[in-house]
Image: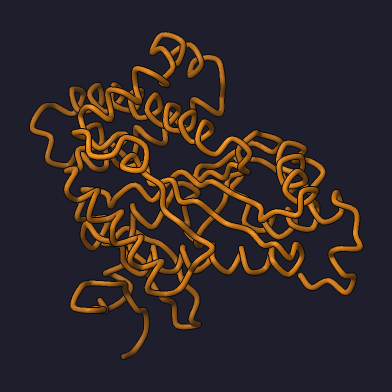
Length: 314
């Protein structure tokens, strides 16, 4: 989007709507949701408008980028690769485009949540630390100064990871009985529960029990992941109370969180940390499970590590 009118001369609500219009093509909506205009998102317009009115950079918070999936059929390793590089580049470019409309610009705080539920998704804390540190390094290396990373180390310092998780859960997580009732009553929460259960089932390939036992175990852990995710959201709100909240999960139109699609993928739930990046012959990118991407393209290394796949002739 390019504007011919100077942003300073336009009313704050017009600037806010223009900023939100930049996000709308990437809205990750709930299934069956029709395309909506900016005025269908009053919560986001109010939050953006408050920054615009004060002449401050718009601050977005995005929970996500936790760690790589532990399933080697999905990912290339435990460190960020081309999928994260492309996604962070997209977010940095989005901030730059917002700056063309709102001169103070925008910042996106990546709220890396791997330590919040690392025990539930069965990823070692050392891998989560390495992933988060590599994200920070990538942002610094490429000069994406509109992006930053926020994780539990910024809140609870050097406490043991188990103590950090216990603190967050006890202080912020919803009660399990209330969450179970919400899953039964609310279609969006049910879809979230089913999506997380599916991921946990995919990542539990080494489970030694029966199929039914594996399903029961993953359903139990899915409730725990949602509890901890909600707790993380409450903690983020406490530390970034005025921010515009983004989400990597599909969100209904008008919800307090705006679902955002980072890269093209055939599944609305696919993220860079559950997949590998594949470059198509026309230069576009998509995200696929590693095993599937390997059937379509050849593996490319970067800085001595697997990075992505390329489709087509060498």
